[in-house]
Image (cartoon, rainbow, N blue to C red; front, top):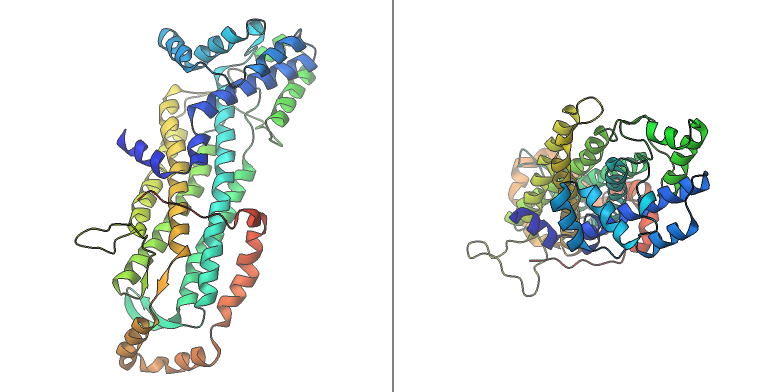
Length: 411
């Protein structure tokens, strides 16, 4: 799939790894180890030697054997159970004990969603930081403000950047909320009733609940979903991708504005030293790519909505193939557009003389706005600095350690 290949080449290594087969199958093995440890702690006949054997082989996956097993069994989870058991013969009888495929599948997806948000948030914080610097630098530079792309009133270059900032501030809060709202599917059994685990623990409900809690905590989650079918509710995917879609809308608006201002010759993106534009538009750069990918991100929202609405009773399998594409692609695309936007905002070039010329050209048609011009000339735009001080800067505190990271883009 050509599109997937492009996403892989543009996206960061950390996001690519987050949705890689290697991380997925290592996480499956870790989940089987968590399950075995919790079952042993609660009294099932599992030995320390079995767990140690599993832990020693958690990351040495024979992908060729797994692929051959899947070809024969037509079942990816059981193929990896067999592959894991092959290198853990002592532990083979207790791997995946009492669990259903969604124990590893869904819980791994939730881990990937959580980790994906943790990758995106510092990148978004860096974009906000770069834009805040830009807004502060140009807070007092008057420029034409537009409605319907017609000159309307004066604003400042910094104030316009605060329109972009405000949208991104909303996005960082939305991403944090979506991440923090995530729960673990936990240990729920084939239809969410935990019947298989009740049987393992001879009807002891307290032990089954404790098993769920222990594995949830081992996986780094504070809570598990109280109610699931075979899967966690696919509305969770809707919620996660909706936050990314809204981020895509913000980036599309920002980059469209930059394209329009570049056409007016008022602002220009940074042009890399060895970058080549097109023959018709030698200045063509990254903003249009961001718009293109942001549209793809927005379009992906249809997938989880259709999937959530089409689930049958406790579960239907038609979600599986779709989610394997739509979830990774959404995060990979968001990752790319944030890296690109950071590159753009770190090097925006402003042409004050061109801006001034446009103002003088339009002043005869804007005589009633002379008082605004005088206010801007006399005192600048205090609103911009207030917004930055009260809304933007405190938001960046959790991401200070990541703030100096630079990005290198694939051209």
